[in-house]
Image (cartoon, rainbow, N blue to C red; front, side):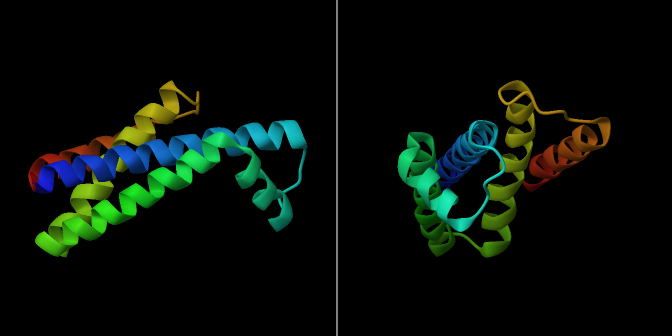
Length: 119
């Protein structure tokens, strides 16, 4: 059960972050330099991907709560956060066309090594 919960946490967290990043970058390009609270609330209410991102964050949160009820925190936090960092780095490069320099790539590989040691 812990691996199912862990998979749900990682997938929903990565999806939420990608959706949110994509929409916020798109919003910044189309609406200019409006970053106030009112424009953020308006964006949340009018953009489907932001609503989906919030839903994914909610799923991740409740799956994490279920995981820490059955597993020690010393396992739950690194096992859920580390794969998220690695996947987000890879997908940000591939899907969002973000620049990933060599230092960031090496850092992601070190985190990946930590995941292997933890498992």
